[in-house]
Length: 265
Length: 323
Image (tube, rainbow over all chains, first blue to last red; front, side, top):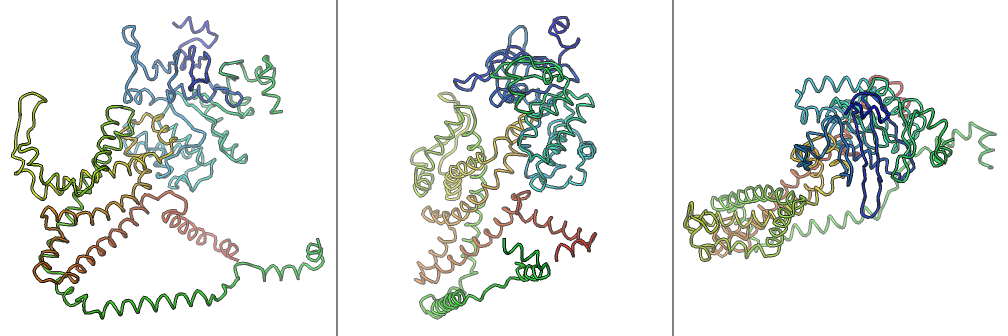
């Protein structure tokens, strides 16, 4: 198994995320047309691509928010939504899927903070309710995370009382509070005013430097250049090109990558 | 352009004009027509009250005499008790029905749909009479395995008293309406919230209890208040199955004394009194579930606290701001 993965061009050792031949259609529209992707532990992968290229859909398939039609995705040894036993693949019930998802953190474009809870309550909800930590333990970690995203003074504020950038930083802290093995970012800065984008990207760059495994779908080329270990360019439901940021961004090989990047210069 | 040059030419004059134009010092004009309308309205109201108070036919002394009489109060307790019990059962069954109706399970959602279709589609009065006369349809009620042996059996007439018939009729009917109200509330919650609970690995039960229902409450509470008030008045229907509620009690009195209007006034005032209390309660509940919303009292209170803290810490700055 291990040998097979080193042959795939990723670093030796078990990949944390292993996607094979992923197909996904919405009705008659095929959004993903066979995606293969390996993500190594500690790797930061930035997925770029024009709107409608399927990059957000692919991200949502990784934690089974969308069920794929063909192929497989394995995260940390778990195929989310399914169990393979004695050579037979069975669909799992919702309760079992919930358990599988608990090691994956996710940050959404629209933040999706719980509006009826304060920032602190938002962060400790999953650690207490899902991961069965004590309230004290969860609160301590939450205050640590709030400090890390620079929002200790907003612990008791409700989401509506915060700016978009502050809300997204709380959402990042909330996702980190479950101590995830993998973090998914679904266009985390697309709903933000331009002047608020920087604070969120800075927080994410911090996480990247600390060795967290991240898959980031974004339009922020600058972030890809500075923080990514690998840039994946998607278009029309395929991965068109991938590699080191300086190669993909600096010297794109595929005409569609070139066309996409030319719009940002 | 001319205005601009003027300002440039004489900044002092511009400042004076800006001070005069400060909207903070604007006066509210005296609106004669509004005051006149208020006056006329109050006059008519006072006249109406005077007429009602002085109309002998209302029998106000009799109203006061019977208002807190034991039979009336007993009827009031029955009305309140029936309302609370039927509503509580109705909300619980309604919640289960709403969740079943929204589930992906075809069996659960069609059973819930069938229930709602039947209980909303037939008059409450008919349902009450039906429950009361259940024994004519089924003289015995038993728990048994379908087409198999009977495990336990009761005489229907022992089981169905006016009280149980009233509770069953009101609660099961209410459940159908509450199911639709709760379903609407659950649907009003942002899809992203549900997705978030899934992504964080919450079980559906926990997601409903902690995230979805608290947010749905904002749109569930107002129509539920409506239903509760309807329910208080709907309990008066149980007088047809000889249940001694508030209306039945005053009817029992005026059938003896023929003081129809005064006794009905007793009931009307009690009904109004209860609904008024409920309105106040509903306001509190709505404010509780509105926390975190922009413009809600909680947010405003916090803003005020924040403003107070600010003015305490930096009085000079606050003064500057108030200028």
